[in-house]
Image 1 (cartoon, rainbow, N blue to C red):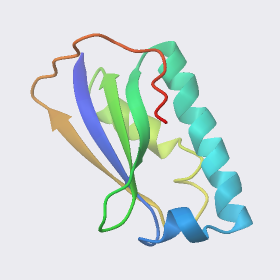
Image 2: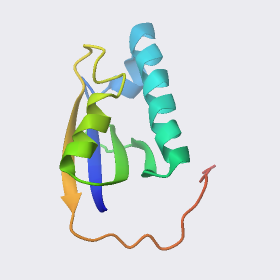
Image 3: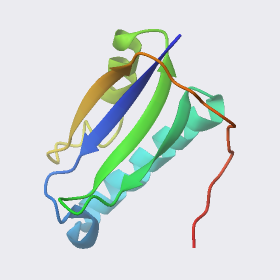
Length: 107
């Protein structure tokens, strides 16, 4: 097994603050899709990153190979919604998992 970093790029930097109802619905389906894989154990962590240059989504995935990650990302509802999202996939030569958390909630 190998680890991969996925960076989901929204259609515009202001997306979190001005998404349409259609985009919000696609994002809800996206979150459920990733949550199901997190529960299954192949998604290690996922969530939004509030980058000052524009928010984006982070996912760390454990998968057999690059093709498996690309299949997973390709099946993401937000990728097939035709809303202008794209995803960069980067292999990680190593990953130190430390302790795994079920859920991290920040104030």
